Length: 312
Image 1: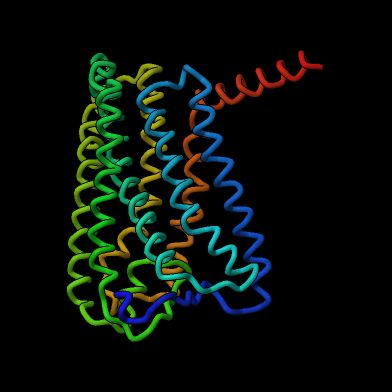
Image 2: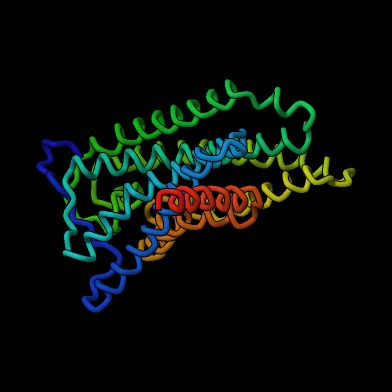
């Protein structure tokens, strides 16, 4: 969609055009987004404030919260504006930016989940070498690697997506996502579908292999193990991690479908779950199953109460 096609903005059809649903949906999505912001930023703050949580596992959890907050914030405020004031128009540059950042953070999350699987493998299968395996240097190397992967994949997709000649600017979706843009009547779509399919396949298969391989070794190790308290804690965090993976990857597989096979209404519901509900659920999944999180939260709240009491 080059500038010489005279496409200066896009019209997003959104989730629904039913007038009676606009205010209720605005309230629902506002509630979900507020919980998402509080949950994810609260998790990051809690990990920063409590020195007991300065471990590789919580380093990755804090980054998961950051990624969830960022890609939810890329999408949700615009959707809320669509419901509140009926603003369904998005500029060309804003559409490019929205797709770019959404792709960066979702790709980064895929590789982050794979990194968390590696961390759990080291904790369960190599507990005596855990501190030397998961050093600060290793954690930061992994941190920069998955963001670089996100930036590279997003840059490639943007370069291919936004050079097409299109005859329509009406997008049957609630944000600038790749499948509905591929559904527009444009020249060069076949090439873009091949690029998207190749990148999505590599991204999903590569990250899934890095997730399933450590868990295979964890499963084999667990067969001959009588779990001590530390190992029980590791298995507990494995359960939380696997729960996050299972609810995340279902939506990602929609990128592997040809544009002709996409049912946009179904895709919309899937991406509502992926972009808004999952970022809200992830902090709850990890904190509710983790005694350290609950203990740290009580300690931080206790300190705040004590400081407020001493102030008065």
